[in-house]
Length: 353
Image 1 (cartoon, one colour):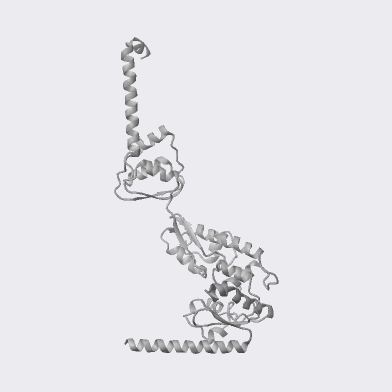
Image 2: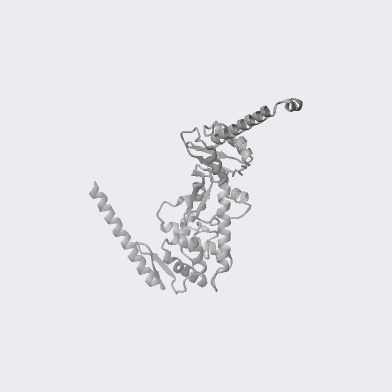
């Protein structure tokens, strides 16, 4: 072949080179057009990239779903241009008629689809698990496991799960395991509790961060009124200092579990369980819910008052009292208001018939 080239007239040689150059340019232009032209899919396509998948495998998957027309041509163009995107694991929503260039841009920018789950302050651990299990975008790896098994899987065997997870909004990509979200919530609560405990007030009747967590969970369940949390904390702290029983209805309800049907009876208050703070002194053995930041802060920074009692007003919020006589009067007023509300509700139901 080299001998043949040497014997070719110079004019023909130049022409052959130009033809080859033109062909190469035309081929490159075709590759570039394919890379920037709208894709074939008339509808959005959801792409799930798993661990270990290569770019070639991802493009093959896109071609199979109708989002990419010539995957090998796209790869060839990217090699020529030195485009080597790092594809983040996760789910991508490919728009309708997205060009290969637009798809690669999604990979370069790491635009994985993100979902979110919100855990409300005061949620119990069992309710948190139910929300995780009910979310179709979360991988239910813990389904059927006991609380003890879950805590062991998290690396904290022997710990009670109640209260250990921070209620917040967690953002995740579809297919994330439930264990991953629980780990995020556990670590966030541990970090926040340690920070709040370091900045606690002085002379508290609480010896450990865990006791503060238990108290915070009680405060969380006692009130949803932001301005009351520290005052309710003050009542509980005053009672702990005096050795008085805490007498908190939410702890009784938690101890009843599935036996609670919406109304606390005298029998409930007098039936002993580990969580009945009417029959047992001190804090309950574990938290009774997942407390939020404000309740955690209230537990270690209670109001300095002489209040020892509180009762619901029936209109939101509570009445606070220093003496049992005043408290009993407020309880009678509250019960009378409840009876009046029930009577009015009964008359409305009769009138509706």
